[in-house]
Image (cartoon, rainbow, N blue to C red; front, side, top):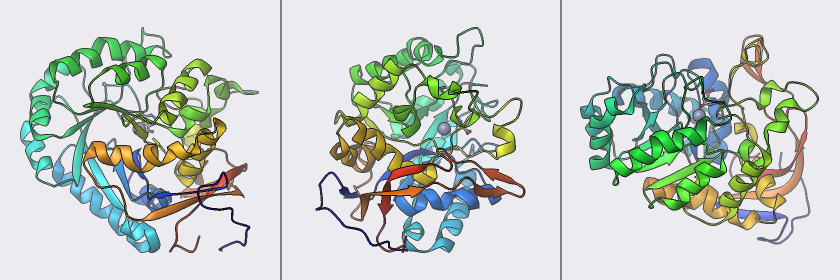
Length: 367
Ligand code: DOR
Ligand code: ZN
């Protein structure tokens, strides 16, 4: 459905052509759920770093590679650009993780590239995560040696700490000492949400980077309470004050190679989001790049999207920048009110039923 439209010149305010981007943090789930969502990411992004918080979690290279094959089978059925999608897998770190698993990951030549540290109980399916980082030092040492990346959910899970302070406290109590102890370890502070997190990443050596989500660039915590409780804006780390959003946006558009795109698109069925105790996670994969474009354009910095979305993450993870191209065009479209997900239990996307201003053309997918 190639709509007719008047195209402005390339590089104008109305279009932006960029190398096919990568999403360095996404949740696909598994089975029917994965089949329902993976194509949204695979259509636009050349690669994505796939999070391992399944039930049971993906703790071994064998499990990660089998999961990868299931993702590939699903996206190949879609054809077009999605069929060329390259999933990059992560392992879920537990206190029982074996350092030899790191050697196996390193031997996959980029298929399994990172290990995810969830503080135990910090978020969805984080129960098997790490209670005390000292207990995983042997694994971290091996990762440092092998060049395997550590992706960190940067929040303490201590209930006594205010939920809005958990990232800043984690950075000070856990992350700073960890980075000092393992200076060669590549570390990504995932979905950074605070000015303190941004400052930490800026002050540390190039081994330390961060992903930033589109929803944390677009919304402050006010969005959670706009006219009532808004469960589809609830994610972890939770949205913060406006001044933090501004710090994130400044970092994202600032041209530093330390900050790159990680959508943290995290699907949950409607019944799990809108219940008495709703799950954390915003589904954004249907519109990830348009949402980032909206955020960048809001400060007149659309051109900075190229590095953030297509170059810096690839460089950090040791992949070439894509030779394929996608084109963002200023063409309004309406987000569906829901997507099919589980039988009788749909997925409510961010901005459901609203219009977005940016659309992605991918060349050979006929979209
Ligand atoms: O909001 C979130 N959802 N944050 C996370 O850390 C996990 C994710 C999920 O898996 O649903
Ligand atoms: Zn996540």
